[in-house]
Amino acid sequence: MALKQAKVITVTSVKGGTGKSTFTLALAGILSNKKLKTIIVDMDLHSGVIAASLNLKPKKDIYTLVNDYMNHGLKESDEYVIKYNDYIDVLPAPKDPRSVGKINSYYIDIILKKLKYRYDVILIDTNHIIDNINLITFDNSDKIIYLITNDLMDLKNMKTMLAIYKDMNLKNYYLILNEAISNERLSTYEISTFLGQNIDYKIPSNAYIKNMQKILMEGKIITLEKAYQKEKTTLILTEMLDKILK
Ligand SMILES: Nc1ncnc2c1ncn2[C@@H]1O[C@H](COP(=O)(O)OP(=O)(O)O)[C@@H](O)[C@H]1O
Ligand SMILES: [Mg+2]
Image (tube, protein in one colour):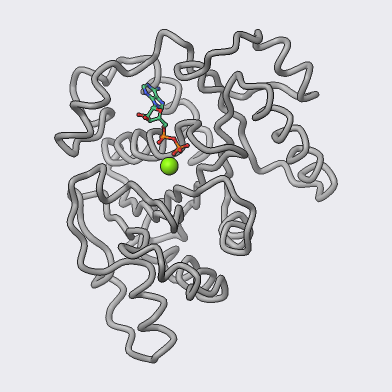
């Protein structure tokens, strides 16, 4: 059991397909290497990929957890998570996406608050939609990581989001530019000028992970693989995590 409350790190974006799930898994691997007890919560409720990416076959998920909670049939919360290795647990997204509509964000809030006492880090993968579930998740987060790409449509939405953060006087976010999967070539300078703020971290285009399909097929996490310990992505994400966990 963690001695202190967990740090809650949420990975999100303003558009789909920017690398959220890929980087959530990479971050989990780094935390595991640091021997920090981590739970990945798959809050991409309609189309979560975390359990499947890791070749896990969970019997329970966020929906069963919320449902048991609502019906006073809650078991130990350990029963709802599935173990990947000694340091990484997963609370999977609902197996049946049709049950998502029945999940009330009130319970998500309670569950996240309870998990804070059991882990060193809660790592949350999300979708890019601003709904009550994501808003509750953001409220519970110490750090929110926005994965952005070189795509101007994505950047325009990000600019809108940044204005909201500014209005709320919130600065608990980082911007990571994932150039490994971007096509349009705006320079980092052009992007930060457009957004009116600096990019915190940049994954360069030559950091494209060529073995992704094989890694996924085998249910592996790149940052747990020896060959990736010195890769740029690992080093950049480690630097960022060290700053967050300090
Ligand atoms: N750095 C990277 N190197 C190689 N492929 C990547 C990288 N980042 C993302 N991808 C690929 O891009 C696609 C979208 O990534 P994903 O993590 O599923 O995005 P999201 O969770 O934001 O929807 C996936 O096919 C993923 O394998
Ligand atoms: Mg995803």
